[in-house]
Image (cartoon, rainbow, N blue to C red; front, top):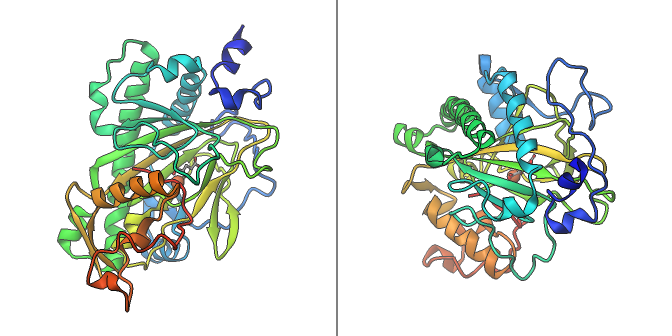
Length: 367
Ligand SMILES: O=C(O)CCC(=O)C(=O)O
Ligand SMILES: [Fe+2]
């Protein structure tokens, strides 16, 4: 009975590939760690300690990687564990119920692609996008969570956990950003407006396992950059996140109790390309479903980003352009659309139609 229910929890294309699901690995730190993705226990990902922020380390990580591991972040381990377990329970509910709006506004359920419209529904696939991503998710705008009519205790406790988690992540983002702004020499107005806690949202994901893993060029999430200023990820022990560095794919190993911060496109633009928007992807596990929780934060509503490599633009314009590209071309062109190109008409005109040859690496986006 339980197994029957669990296998029906998957979106149909994932079912025939999903063997009897394996038990979810526990996220509990301090318990004998099941290092599912690990053989050596270390990786080269830079570490930043939020408890005693070292400007030099932060600077190196932002300039060289666009991604780092955050320790001493102050989010209680019990909260991380409870949220992970809760997310696992929500995704094990029957697929049809999830698809038919079981969770209710402002939560929205999606699968097959992380590219969503601003209201949170999956964006239709464009011409080049015939492959689905092996993922299902729930989008949760933190500012609207109080509107959630939690008729079910499972939903009510999910909302409470998300609110508590969101407050912590807002604290982390607003502690990290001023240090980055300082390093970049931003003025006070830019420091105050380029990251706005009120824009934060959370996405929770389940990546179903697949016996062939990513062997058939099937990805949990295809190679992409995030559109955010900052993204902060909490992953379980299954692993699969990979970041590109100097042309090499590097595994971002799951280490209990740590979070992963990655810089998004808005941060790259704000920094005039001094910082990198991390290019990353998610590999599918052959044996275990994977749960992860992403927090995304953006510039304030209506704020114009100014930097010498880019035309002045608002995040809302960037997002609209990305949506159009994904729909029309099947992939995200991203920052290239807004880049000022020397000796091109773009400098005198708008450049929105001129970059169809510059295929972005990203097929997906957040926002
Ligand atoms: O699940 C992960 O580890 C990464 C998710 C991700 O890249 C995204 O949501 O943009
Ligand atoms: Fe991402």
